[in-house]
Length: 464
Image (cartoon, rainbow, N blue to C red; front, side):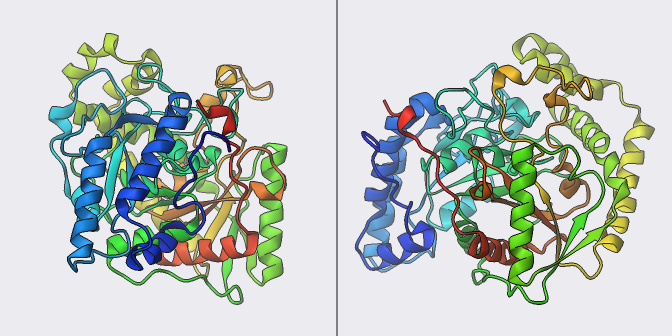
C-alpha cells in the first residue's frame, strides 16, 4: 500500500515480535516508530486516536530497550505498543471520556490496570476515541468525532462502540493491541470493524480510575487482530501460560434458539452458518439450547447504565451538563434520573435469578455461540432511518446480542468470520462461564485454526 509503512506486527503478531525482540533483531523503539508513522499516514482520516503521545512513547520504548539490553526481561509484552481507550486514566495524558465535560476529578489518576500494563513492559502510544461516557454501541461521537470504520474509505460507516477508536486502531494496525471497556458489549460490538476481542469477567481486571458507566458490570478487555494476540495479552497480564487451541473432539457449544439469531442480515446469517458448519465438520458438537429469559436483558442493562452512571457522575452535575453533552447521549442517560429505587433493586435481584437460569441452560456445554451483531456496519447517515419491519432505528437495537454476557456475568469473545463471504466484517460471538477466559480463548484459537485468518481491510483510501 503506497505511502503506508508496513504494520510491524502484521505478520508474526505479538508472539512473533517477542521472538524477534529477544533475538535482538528488532527493538521496541523501531516498532514504536513504525506505529507512529502509520498513525501519521492514516489517522487524520481514520480518527482513531484522541491523543497521540509520540515523544512519551518513544522515550518509553528506548528505556525498555535499554532495560532489556541490561539483562531485564519483563515478559511477552515487553516493548509492545498499545493504545488505550480514553475512559482510562494514564499519567501525563488527558482523559476526556469522549466528552467536553471535564470529569478528570471523577476518574482520578492512573490506576492499577494501566500500572499492570506498564509493569509488563507495554509502550503506551496514546488514547483512543470513545462514545461520550461509553453510552452507545454505534461508535458515533458528535462532540469529539467519530472514527471511520477501516473497511470503507468512501462511506463513513459505524465502527462500533463504545470502544470505537480502539477498534479502528487495532483493525487498521495502528498499535500492537488496544484496550477497550465493555459494559454492554463495547469491546465486542466493534466486530463491525473486524477486530477480535475478549470481554473479561467482572472483577478479573480492576476498573478503578476508569470512567464508569455501570459499575456493577463494567469490564476491561483487549482488542486485537487475532485470537492468538489476545491469548498472548491475557496470559502476560495474568502471569499464566498462554492458552492453546481446544481439541475439537468432545467440545460442546450451545446455539441459543431464542433471540440471538432473529432477523439477521443476509451476510451475517451466511457467514455465521458457514462458520458453525466448519466447526461441526472439524468435530465440534453444536446443540440447540433454550434461553427465553434473554429477551429481558436489554431493559436490565439500560436500567443499570442509566442509574449507575448518574450515581457516579452526580445528579446535579448531570443536569447542569446538559448543554455541554451530545443531546442524544444525555437523553439516553436521563431516564436514570427517574428510576425508582425499588425498580433498580429488582434488577439487581434479577441478576442472580438470570445467572442461575443461565448456569442451568449451559450445564454440560463449553460455551454458547451466536452472531456478535445482527447486521454489518451501516453508514452513519442511515442510523436514524426506521426499520420498515419494526419502526425502530438501528440505534435502538445496537448491542442486542452482547448485553447478555454482562448481565449473566460471563466472559466472551468475538472472532471475525467475514472470510466466509462478506465484504464487511462479521463476528461470531462465544460466551463462556465467568472466569473461564482461558477456555474461551482456547475455543477461539480453535476457531481461528479452523476458519483461517480473516482478510484485512484495504487501507490505501485512508492514506494521506
